[in-house]
Image 1: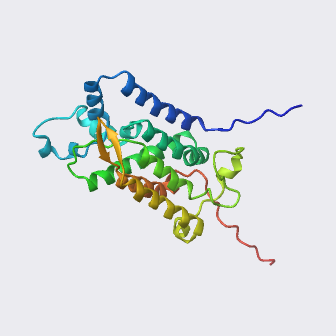
Image 2 (image 1 turned 30 degrees about the horizontal axis):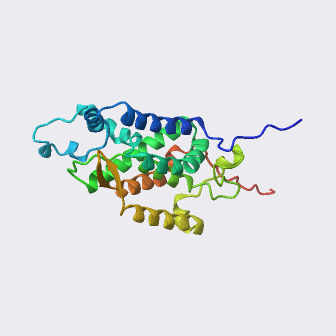
Image 3 (image 1 turned 45 degrees about the horizontal axis):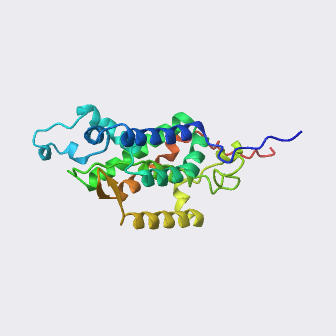
Length: 249
């Protein structure tokens, strides 16, 4: 009997759902909303540091009110400036997000995604106090997924990417202890490449409302650090205590 072939991209449902959400939001902004409505949408759901500096708003209240002060720490991650911005984030999310989602499961993965997105927004707020330009994009959360993934993907028997047959055991290998992260040459090489890429893209910009705006690379770092440090909080894989050797008497 001929064995059924596996799909090239055997992705967790939560990853395909996130990507679909990114695409739907972008399509609505491009095809449904008028320019005025798009501005109102961004004011309500993008992350705007000026929300938290009331003196700069001259008494004006941005759409969404107090609720938006909270939800924009996460909702900004579902909005992208253009198709290129969207595709880049999806390409990075595919391997790293899929690996983490397989290990964490849907609920824990979404919690990590939200936490790292919020951490990225917090870092942006600290480095851009009073900024009126909105910040958008899933890059901070994707960076958090990358940081979480490097805690286990390089381990013996661990996954190497999404373009392969999925072995559940590969996603449950023991993670690298945080204290040992900077001792693994493979992780150090990855960190060097990641920071180099962010330094390069930090010189670029993303188009929003017809205006080229600097890429919020500080948010990427905030999300990455959160993913690295919070990994153990969300990781369901626990290493059992060492078995004590018994004496023969």
